[in-house]
Image (cartoon, rainbow, N blue to C red; front, side, top):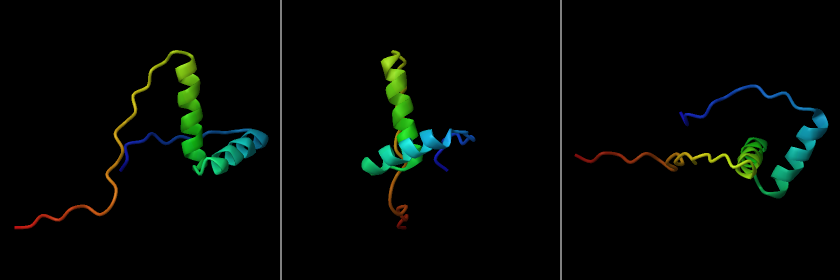
Length: 65
């Protein structure tokens, strides 16, 4: 579990399509693009948001006995 908060977001179809195009040009998912846009908007307002540590990638290490 990543610990991210999931919620429904209703968007105008034209706005969603613009976000989808922006995400594709940046090689991101729509979700990641929305996060980037929100962080940028908050930063412009002077709101600091800490970046959560990234989840570990790859296979879990096995314990050797």
